[in-house]
Amino acid sequence: MRILHVNKFLYRRGGAEGYLFDVASLQREAGHEVAFFGMAHPDNEPMPYAPWFPRQVEFDPVPPGVRGKAEGVGRMVWSTAARGGIERVVKAFRPDVVHLHNIYHQLSPSILSPLRRRRIPAVMTLHDYKLACPTYRFLDDGEICEACLPRRLWQPVVRACNGGSRGASLAVAAELGLHTLLGAYRPVGLFLCPSRFLEGKMREARVFPERLRWVPNFVDVDRWRPAEAPGRGVVFAGRLSDEKGADVVIRAMTHLPGATLDLAGEGPARASLEALAANEGLADRVRFLGRLQAEALGTLLRGAAVSVVPSRWYENQPLAVLEAFASGLPVVGTDLGGIPELIEPGVDGARVPANDPVALADALRPIVDDPALAFRMGASAREKAVRDFGPSRHLERVTAAYDEAIAGAAA
Image (cartoon, rainbow, N blue to C red):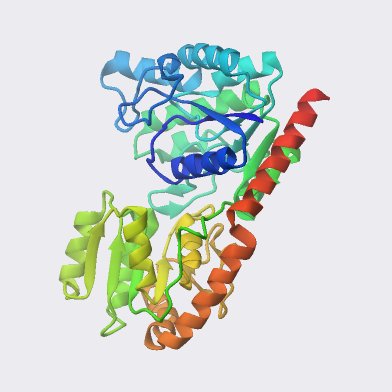
C-alpha cells in the first residue's frame, strides 16, 4: 500500500509528530511505501517532495503587522500554496490512502480538495479537540470550558479565550465556523479517535459522528523496557506548561517527606516551577532534567517507583501514560479526558481529582512507601501495554481503517 502522511510539521516537535513518524516506521517495516507532505521548515527531516511544500509561517506569535495578520488569517482559512503543493505530490506519489494529522492553520483543509477530485481516500487522526473547540483544548483562562458545544462558535469571541485576545479569538472562531459551514472536512472518510473521551466530545460537537472510529495510540514495548527490580521516587514526563499540572505534583511533594521528584521536559512554566520548588523548600528533592531523548527517559522511568500525570485539562490519550506502563511503572493521573480509560485503580495506578495536591499525595504515598507494591502494579501496567497498546495491534487497527476508507471511496 502507498501511504501519504500529512502534517504541518515534519520533525519531532510534539506528540502528534512523534506518532506520525513512529506509525510510518511500523508501516515501512510491514512492507508499505510511505511519503510525507507538510510545511517547509528548517527542522524538517529530509523529504523527497520538500520542494513542493508551502512556505513556513508561524502563528505563535502571530505574524506582525496588519498585512502579516491578514495573510496569516488567509492561510488559516484556505491555503492555495498548500493545495497546489499536495496536488503535485499526489500526482507524483499516487497514494492509495492519505493519512492526515494536524493540518490546521499552516496547511488548512484546502489540501482536501485535490484528494476529493481524484477520489483518493483519506483518514484523519484527531490528536486534539480542534474540530470541536477553536482553541484546541477546552480551556478558558486555565479552567475547563465547553462553551462551544455544540457548534456555539461565537463563544471564543465573547470570552476572548484565545490568549485573552478578542482579535485572535475571532480569527480562530471564524476559521472553524467557516470550515464547518462549508463542510470543508467532508472529504475525510474516517476520523480516528485515540480515546473514547475524544470520540464522545466529537459526537457532542456533531463532527461527522458516523465517521468516527476509536483507534488508540500505541507504544513500542520493545523500546520501553521494564526494570528488573523495584525503583524509587516519582517521575513527571511532559511539557512544563500550566495545563499539565506539574505545579500540583510539586505541592504534593510537601506532603511526602523524603520522596523525590524528577521532572523530564521543557516549557514556558519551567522558571515559575523552579521558583515554586525553592519556595516550598524542595530544592534538594525536586530535579528539573529538561527534555530527554528516548533512551535517557527510559533509564529515568526504569529507576522510578511511579509516574504521575497531574493534568488539569482534557488529555486525549497521553503517551506519557503508555510509555510509563511499557516501562513497568504504575501511573497516578487525574480523572479528566482520556486518562481514566487507561488507569485501573489499585491494579496499575490510581486516579485523583485535578488541582488537588493532598489527594495526589495520598494516592502516591502507598506506592512510594512500598517498592514491592509499586513493582507489582508496574508489572500489571506492562502487561496491559503489551496486550492492548503494542505496535502490531495498532497497525491492525489503522490498516482496518484504511481498508474501510478505501472501500467507502470506491463505493
